[in-house]
Amino acid sequence: MSRWLLHCRAGFENECAAEIRAHALEHGVSGYCKARQDSGYVIFTAHEPGVDLFSLVTLEALIFARQWFAVYDLLNDLPLADRILPVIKLLKQHGLRYADTHLETPDTNTGKELQKLCRALHKPLQAALERHELYDQASVFRLHLCFLSTHAAYIGFASRNNSSPWLMGIPRLHFPRQAPSRSTLKLEEALLRLLSEEERRSELQSGMRAVDLGAAPGGWTWQLVRRRLSVIAVDNGSMQPELLDSGLVEHIREDGFRYQPKKPVDWMVCDIVDKPKKVAALAARWLISGWCRRTIFNLKLPMKKRYQEVQECLDLLERELAEAGIAASIRCKQLYHDREEVTVCVLVADAAGN
Ligand SMILES: C[S@@+](CC[C@H](N)C(=O)[O-])C[C@H]1O[C@@H](n2cnc3c(N)ncnc32)[C@H](O)[C@@H]1O
Image: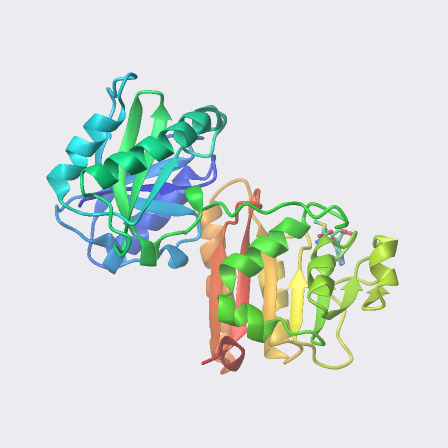
């Protein structure tokens, strides 16, 4: 394979392209990208044929890509009367079997209009795969069809061990009615994506203590309280009164950049809108001072050089932790619920189970 399709947030194609090129190059794979602004996807083509990027780069390591698959071909003349037959013909040339099928579109308004078509094709395609012996429940491969229009789709496959289980890499989360703000979904998605299942069990236990910097009106605090953590919510703004009634929240009206906990807590989370390097340095200070051993924070991105800015923030964090002799696992992703921002999670070594 030498072509990959990467889904990203519309408007972040250049960042996604720069990132995949850099990661591939780190493994000696040079290539180029087709990245049309606001298309919601990037096509990366390696200069050499036969490259297996799935064995070299992990989706987890990519910040701006939500999902990816290796492309067999772009079929751009699919007959509307039977779109499935040409797909089956193509799949037969490649000889793989698939355990699963994702019929998807880029995450754009045009894409949304095509999702009805994707849903309608799912069952007939599955039946055709079974009829043509292209289905195997035990296979590590998943079939991907990404529709760009009613008659054009990229067809390819992903390794189920190195791709997102969610369609287009988007977890479907429902906004809980009692939550004080939509931001709550950001922390919920961060916990789902940036922690493993085991870490969600071990690192988010009832009775743990957290500080939420820039907490008002309380969407992130709500997620922590829901998991029975007690929270010090730091913000000059007002918190949702019901949240304060839970008995698990102490509201402190103070500057989040100056606040220091009286004793160490398990978690620090931060959703303050400020310069990304200032927020990264704040997180480093909390970890190095031993005020917390786990943190999740957002980096609001500037208008330009966004990929470079994220890299510099992560370098700063890595450098400062290394200088302080702290081993940590640093994870970063642009979540579906993130807009002009990315979310970072840091677990200090034994908190990361190392
Ligand atoms: C995006 S909102 C946070 C939303 C919150 N995470 C939620 O889920 O409801 C950012 C908050 O940061 C607060 N903020 C901005 N600068 C701050 C600072 N220096 N210290 C503490 N809070 C700050 C603002 O008052 C605002 O409430």
